[in-house]
Length: 142
Image (cartoon, rainbow, N blue to C red; front, side, top):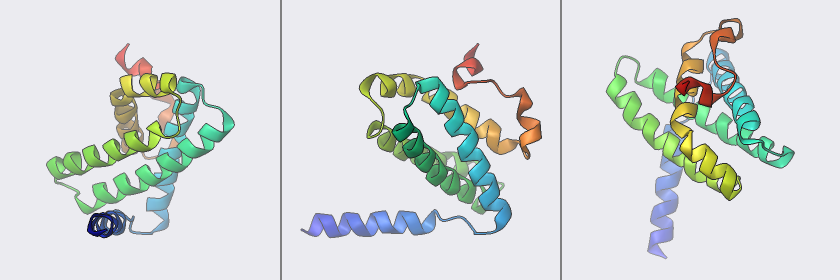
């Protein structure tokens, strides 16, 4: 019983700390980031409609957390990298619940590519500048 209450408190604390600042630019960046990454995953992993919606929700949650971390720790790349690693690990766990075994193995094998693509998307300020990005995350290694 005590474990459950301790775990619930820890989980709640993580969600509060990871919320974005709330301004429109931050939300727009997170939304754009999640949408573009989700589109790459939908195509690359051949997701069905149910999986596509779930992946979009997961990526939106992750993008909001990452955007907040990047803004709160601007100038401290080591801290951004440390916190991002934890956020990406949580995304891996959530993805396992949505994807088939074959899809998850494909995702897991290319997750570094997806993370790199996510970072490139985040560095790009507008959708017009995204034309240079590869059509899928696996193209990053080619």
